[in-house]
Amino acid sequence: MGISDLKVSNNPGDVLVTYALGSCIGVAVFDPKVKVGGLLHFMLPDSSLDADKAKAMPSMFADTGIISLFKVCYAYGAEKKRMVVKIAGGANILDDTNYFRIGQKNIMAMRKIFWRNNVLIDSEDTGGNFNRTVRLELSSGRCILKSSSGKVRDL
Image 1: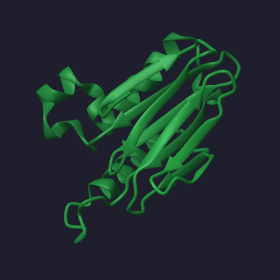
Image 2: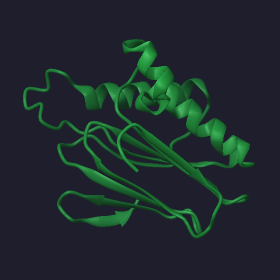
Image 3: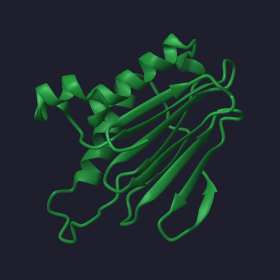
């Protein structure tokens, strides 16, 4: 899946993958009881930046994308209290002066949304100045992180 994309599945054979998370953030969720998982790759912190774009592409923004991710998972039978949440991205890429701070703004927006909705983050790898790829295996809920340096580990 690409930037501003969201995928949810209950097929245990599926592996959801998002590539090149720089300042963007990948949100992986998994409900182990019903084996429903989803992955969101959002790009910007707040849909008020462009209301028309948010309607057309809710996955582009933290506020509309995270809500959409959880709602689709609920439609597949997931429950918030059982969902495991893992986060990656929010890096400082191509902004050496840290002027725009898009990665930091994305992290802050995501944290506020989770805090307001009583959602805990189980694991995360955020910040830095490198890209990440995230894989979510629906057979087990295993979430694998690969950094641009080639390092691979469970998230």
